[in-house]
Length: 299
Ligand SMILES: [Zn+2]
Image (cartoon, rainbow, N blue to C red):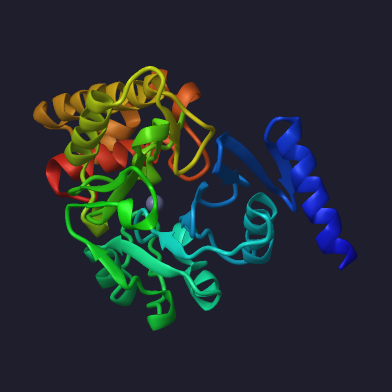
C-alpha cells in the first residue's frame, strides 16, 4: 500500500513538474496530454496512449524488464493496465512482453506476418541465432494487412504497414491529431538500422518506407524511434540519406567485381563509422547488409 501511494505521488509530481518520471530504470516522458514515451534503452522504445476507456501500449519489451515496464505504465496512467497492445513487428525486444500484458487483459494487434513469424522463426544469417517459437499467449489476435484506423480504440490515427522494410511485418502508429508517430524499428535514431533480410526486410524497402513517412510528416512531427532518442523528421532524412549513399558505394564496388572480403577491406563506409556505428549493427555488419541486399550472397 505504501509503495502504491508513493508511486502514485511520484507519478503525479513528475507530471506537474513537466512530464519526466523515472521508474525502475524506465524513463517516462509525456509528449502530449495522455501520450507517453517509455524507454530504458535496453530493448525497444514503448509508446503509451490514454484514449478514454482504452489504454494502448505500443510494443511490450522483453524479460527481465516486464514488471518494471508494468510499473511505469501504471505510474503514468493512474494504475491502469493496457486494454490494447500494438506490436510494431515481430522481434523479441518488442514482443516478448505480449503474454505478460495479454494476461492483464490486453488484446494484441499486429501485422498478419508477425503471427506467422512468431510461430515459425527462421535462423538469422547475421547473428546465427534462431529465436524460440512462441506459444499462443504471445500471438496477436487482431491482424492488420495494409492499414487500420484506430478510431474504434478512441484514437484519431491509424496503423500503417510498410512492405519489406525492417521486416515483412512492420507497422507504424501515426497519432495524427497529436502529430506523433511511433516508428517501430523503421527508425534507429542516429545508428545504423538493423535490416532483417532473413525476415523479409530489404534496404530498398526500408528507404522507400522512410521516403513515404518523410513525405507525409513535417518539421513539427515527433517520432518515437524503435531505438534511440525522441526524434524529428531530420533524423529520418539523415538515416535515409546514409542508406542511399552507403548502398550506392557498395553497389559500385560490386559492379567493379569485388567480393565481400575485398569490400570489407576497402571499407566504403569509413566516414560514416563515427556517427552511425553501434554495438549490434557495426560498420562491418552494415556493409554485409548492403552486399547481401545487392547480390543475394552472404559471403
Ligand atoms: Zn526490430
